[in-house]
Image 1: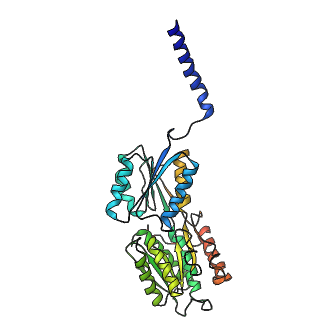
Image 2: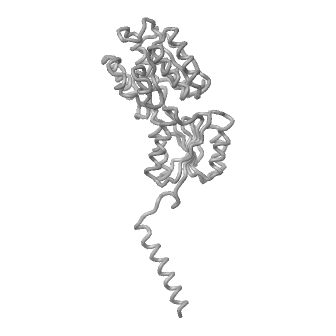
Length: 341
């Protein structure tokens, strides 16, 4: 009799649990706290691309059930595939892989771990259900930076601007993303005055500030007075060179205006933070839109310029007006910017 009553209690308990559990809701992911891996082809502390992305993941950690974010960093190419593989084997639920050179490793490894979600950012990889790609329209931001640089190089009334019609560009590695930056910048400069010369160089590394400074000082020495960098940590050397030369730089990826106040006209910010937070939201709240690529650019405010409040009146009002017109032209489609990929 006691055994029969015990069985009845258990059955009733199970039925009550099934009946009322929907009222309390459940998470869209497993009940246990999730782990995020941030596997990057550089290091944190760049005050730019990777720091911005990490900030977005920290926001996701605050908003969702995340037990840990592990940052796996290296400038050495031989580490990138093992770092990604080790993170997957360690059971990280959501794995972010950036930047562009990680594409082939994600393509190779993601299908081997179908229950985990991968995000390739600053690259494109379609058709794999557990992979989402995020790209950025850096060429559009670079175009606007080119308009600004071209307008400023003629303003000889501004201290730090010389009589030479020359501007410069320093990239990290000569890859598609770097060429997008360069081509967009060249196109923006030419839209103002095709006679302005654009000096350019690639450092061959995103992690060499000394090389960035050396290249930038060479360009300033040749007559450039505004240099855009798109070079990660290497670009920090470009900004240092601008201050040393008494000239100007344009920052990239994050707000770098205050690194050397008075010498950074603006920064072309990729909203890496927002993009990675958005994809994390797809993972935690759904729906997961695997196999797709999402583009963040000037058109949708995924690439923006700073408000130039730090540089202040060194950028004249009429120059700011023309820069705003360039942004609106890209948004309304009247300006088309070339993209390498």
